[in-house]
Length: 389
Image 1 (cartoon, rainbow, N blue to C red):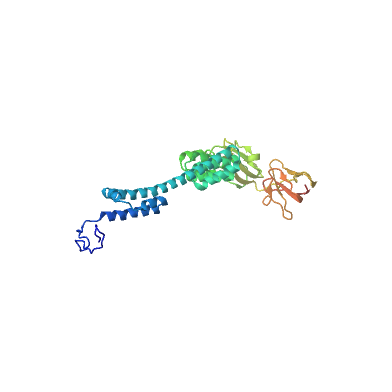
Image 2: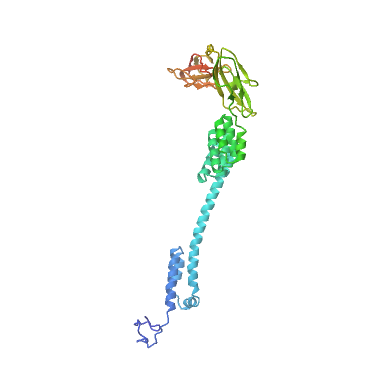
């Protein structure tokens, strides 16, 4: 303990200063406390980034007791100083977070606008790149998924569009528009089984009803396939009351079918390979029904006529300009081809011909067959080409 008059160090038990004779006061020394607290505040402010000059100025010893007297009169200022210091730090953190959020928002908005711009310019490659960036930030955004669906649809990428639509439905199972688009893809590929699955798992009655309108049932052959001794009548029915087309020689009913109107007479001593299919008012075909009938003990399966080799053009030879190879396919038949030698060509290992074939460079041999759809094939025709640009 020190004497307040002369500053001499005194034992705690002293009541009178031995140097100056002044009476020692037992009151708590607020001045010393206030100085200590003020120094603590100054140190905290220095840690929180206050300027060096400000610290130096505030660390100067006051020339008189006026400043401490003010503090003594208003002890709440010390607490206020602490609060202000904490508020400065909190405000800085909030500002930095707000700045970061605003920056990310502006970055996302710029990418979104770029996607729309590229779509307007029909630059679907860059538009897709932009929407992929957006989806990395928010993979479940229906807005971004809808953008990607439009891009895939416009660019003709049906495989990617199919995946996007399934994601949309997973995120929003009642999305009617997504089901409509998915239905369009399945109808284009004649995937009746997929449409049936959609209808069975539809989330509500409205979507289920919409899908079922496009389902086409397979026709039913009322006469059980098999061997019969006498003439029979064959009736074909449809649960959905759709149009029915049929053939009796095993060819495709979609291509060569006759419209069913009355029961079909199966005559004595004949062998019939019946195929039938239903068609709805929208022109969609369902699955085929199949049955073989042997009428009469002496009835045997007919031997098909020999199928002639297909015509292929241009003829074999040497070429120096790009060529497209075509195959003359009769109505009701299909052609298959292969560039592989040493392997017997069949419909199973060949490529179905659906249009022009690009002639490859160098020496090559094209193998071609045609089939009637009942497993009957022509012999293999081979044509050799030498294309040197």
